[in-house]
Image (cartoon, rainbow, N blue to C red):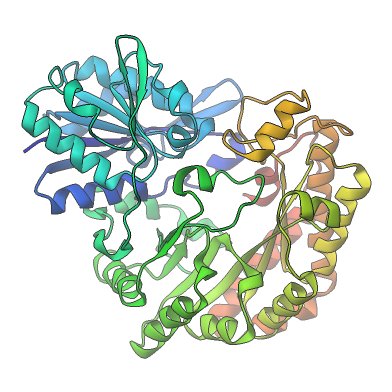
Length: 505
């Protein structure tokens, strides 16, 4: 059977992002690995970031975190892969993914190289132009990688693979200088058929280092899980639909809670961050997950850092989440300006949202609202509408991001059609982007001042904190959050400082 190596490249971060351990389990390739293992293939994972989470080298204004390339062979221990898959999920990290490809190709010149991830799904034609690459995976990767591995078994070498590639859906490859796109890959219908991520192939203990210093974690060790794939919404600024379409598939409540139990038993995990794009899409399923945790008497804390659609929730679901261990909910509120909300296709009942936020606060759940400012059509008055909404929304913490035209989004098309510059750094937290009415510097200054003003307002209304306290553990968490809030308010303002610079240690 084919030997497969999945590689997670080093991370490229701004300075403020590396003061805490920036590594995390790369669940995408861990899912691919588990699927291939279940089909009897030999699989290894090399997480360059995770293995070298404490090794930092500055490159210009950014920092590379991860193993030096000279140490790669030592970590592989003589493993000779037939197929090497490199994850390229973030546009900001794409250059590092191609640098990694170049290094790995020099070490394994006869291996078949494929690259996948969100960036590849959005821009496959650009990625496949790298002459060192054999193929690009577009969209969901489990079946694609299995068929690639089976094709290698059938053909016996990289050189003989190319006749088989045209029959494998969901890839792009080069033939005689021509880029060939095969037919679209159908998504797996049943998310429960995919085994849990192959975390046994990852340096799990490395991801836990330094978590006790992060004030936003309630407990540690903490790790990440995914309970569903995709999102049915069509937000103008979001690139998720470029990978999954507008489909949504949720795992069963039993499967989700079985994974939590496994994480507790194998790794001592006491908190999980659920990274779904739309966890609340099926409210019955969400409630069933909560009931499953409660009925099994599982002692776990959890949060939704990627956001949860508040317009799909009700008081019953929020109360169930609290009883099941949820201590923090992040809501993608995005804009308080009616015209902007309409254009970005983020329409929901704001009065209902505020009611549910107040209810979540009342029963002791911490609430975070994410907001986006600096859309290309926005004048300062529109942005200030969003600030007022954030201030009046009753969220405990408001986080402001700069609108960024990610490739594959309608916002990217809007920027291009209006003749606006398309930035290269792919960051929603550093600086800002010049729009039709404001400069990027103005947007950055507004964003950071908004964060401080909301934090100052919440400190002045400190009595809200008492809703959060029900145990000694709650008191300790409140003290950490209060300390962080004071730091945000008192920290000297720096020109063009990033959102992460304001929020992180």
